[in-house]
Amino acid sequence: MKRTKVHFKNHFGIELAGDLYTPENAAEKGNAAIAISGPFGAVKEQSSGFYANEMARRGFVALAFDPSFTGESAGEPRYMNSPDINTEDFMAAVDFLSTRANIDPEKIGIIGICGWGGMALNAAAVDTRIKATVASTMYDMSRVTANGYNDSADSAEARNEMRKALMAQRIEDFRNGAYKLAGGVIDPLPEDAPQFVKDYYAYYKTPRGYHERSLNSNGGWNITAATSLLNTKLLAYADEIENAVMVVHGEKAHSRYFGETAFKKLKGDNKELVIIPGASHVDLYDNPEKIPFGKIDEFFRKYLK
Image 1 (tube, rainbow, N blue to C red):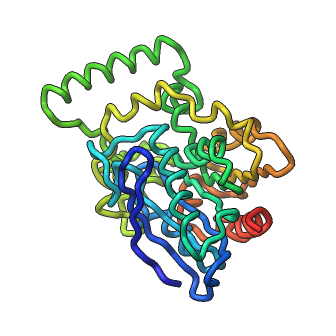
Image 2 (cartoon, rainbow, N blue to C red):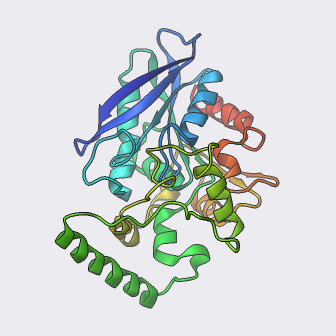
């Protein structure tokens, strides 16, 4: 297939960078297309590019893009995230694909990986042009930020302590004229680290998945980037998504509860939950033996026609 660097602006005026994967046998018009982003803190050369390459091999035009403030996309300050802006990033990708001469605007889907799985569902809830959505190994980033893992810190008291710390950091950042980073995947890896942290390390900190522009591979997000996620619920209208959705998760993923909870909110007979036996969270980043590309292919062929 052919890979082309592309750029397009979202509604906030931020220029996004993407890699457009076009099958060699693509028609001059009428092709189905898929926009892909994630994981949270990754760049398009990592998991989203892996997915895009495979989907293009299967005949789809696929766009892997860097979200605002990250990778080769624009946006200042760097290493920020926002439920609103990052949802808009998916919608801007749909804008871009809808205006390509070789793409049928009625045949556009999206894939959100990890934290961008939640963003993808949020985009699908507002953007009726998205005919089919796959959320793979998804995180609900607003939930984990506000409640902690497995909702272990789901209390007003815990959130207020986090708010105080974030506001103190805002003052420090303003005084210093720079944003303090939260740190990427922990390095060196403690011997007693949970298995999912070891899995993250094995992807982001080794030649398997390391990239110089990846936040998770390096210094991480700005600490205060958590502010918007703490104050916004991503899946507020997920129950109103009328178009097709597939939620894919690993049986052994520490994050599985995000996908299962999200799926319970969805309505209609065009929604599907796929649990991959024996798979961990990170297996669905780049393991072709675990990622159900066959099912994903069938799903998009069914609903992008």
